[in-house]
Image (cartoon, rainbow, N blue to C red):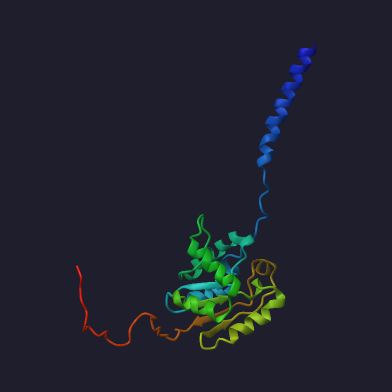
Length: 205
């Protein structure tokens, strides 16, 4: 009887472990996010499709790293305007992409960030003010307006009161054209200004 009871207990424990072990790897899926599509897409993307030229577009500020999967939105909405973009969702982020995201995430919209975008050949800048905290939006937009030589305002969009827009940071977009930056000459430190005198030279083998 004791052996029978022990065998039954062992069998029950084995069955329990077979059921419980897979639960160790269980992870709840994130709540689904409704993406505006069709006639509901943010109007800024249909506007981008009307702009002449195929110059690259960048959308800033970027989604924070905790919402990295939202980078897929940049790619999805690029199918409405078909212009090159700087950021997207991928299984591997090259180090230069990570650095660029860090630089723009930390310093944009300062003058150096705009100069960096110009050096990369970016032509159109789309600003999503809702991605900034409410208490920072006015100051950040004022910073942009303080760079008139670098940016030319193309279009402002209204701040639409829609739950799906607000959740994704859409509404109130401001679109700028990046103007060509001034050429700056650099004088290499080790370049002589005059020809070096050759008298007195000797070559030893």
